[in-house]
Image 1 (cartoon, rainbow, N blue to C red):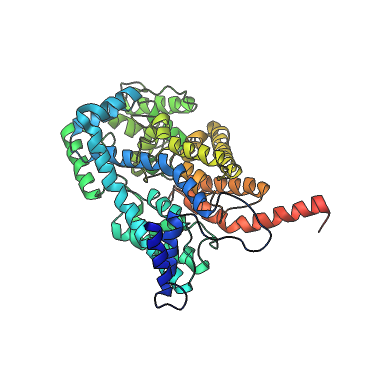
Image 2 (image 1 turned 60 degrees about the vertical axis):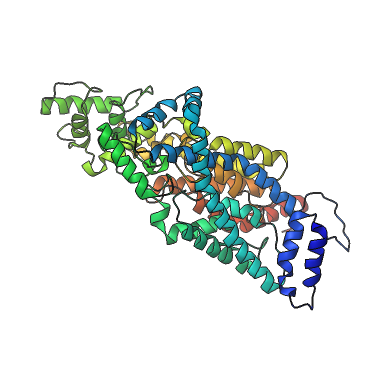
Length: 509
């Protein structure tokens, strides 16, 4: 019955009929439900079961772990942060230190049902808007050009939804996907003709057009005002100060600080934090300054046992007074950065790896991205060379920053910027780096295509991402711009790699 219905609709849109302009829409539905009817009429003939539709469906399946984690994490974060109940928040934080406690928290009183409901209500409207508006734009351009609608937006639509924060207003999401699809894809000729990743172009348009809705404390629930009021109520009832109070800042937002905050500032704060097991390499400098400060201020205390006021006074006092010379305006940022670097509270590596953190829908779980990567590599759809190259580029660049910051300069690098000495492996757990590695940088249209080019292309993107993240404190998430820059240089990389191959193998100059 469905086949007869589609054949009837196709007959109404044949060339010369009044509705022939609508044929791309009917053909797109036919192709989506059935095997593509197109067959090569002239040589050469290539037999392959993987067409564009199947290629996109494979990528969609690889995204399923990220989609499930997006729904779950968005739901549980809203359930806790919007409750206004500090006891529930404390219970959640305590449960995040072991998997069994976390599962018990979610199953208690059938909370998981509410969590799934809240997550679905946050995620699926964005998906519907993305597909509806973006699909409409593609359909209009296809009808005007009388071209078939390609299945590329099957992946672009869900990718765009996954790289948005849950608090994005619906109309902004619609404007972003429409502008991004038209400017980055349709103006270049449609699917397969774009020079940059369409989903990232959509996000870039939203980011630079509405920066207030795409940065800052906007990553929990669906209404930032409600979450802010809930956190104020929690902190008031719990009697917590601004530094140790509950916050909706993402790990990357805590990482985002100026170069004027030095290693010695962060390490001095870390000596007063609980459960800091790492050796603090700048301790000799801190101890020397502390002895001078305690002598001048006549403070009857020891390093590591300071009350909050004493700790702030020590860190922000001038060097001549025995302090560490940090501007008081930067103390709060240094305090939060110390908690991030030394894994305070739920800011542990395992929570970041599995996805118990704040962020855009799809970027929160490195584990989910890794599952998707394994599936793409197994099906030979994903470019593993690009993935590995980008990871190596990011890690090597971050490691170079770390080694230089920790081993050069005055007092063994104690006065170098703390952001440059951030552990290299932690960069791989923060922000959208993992999601960009697996699903964005490997876009077959806008990425490099030759084997060696993929290594160079991936390494370049990883290197640029860390440079932007570490050196530009105004924009800590450099993955989006790094991949777009890599897209622009991909044809140039392919050109020089191909030219090198011709010279080396065939002697052609």
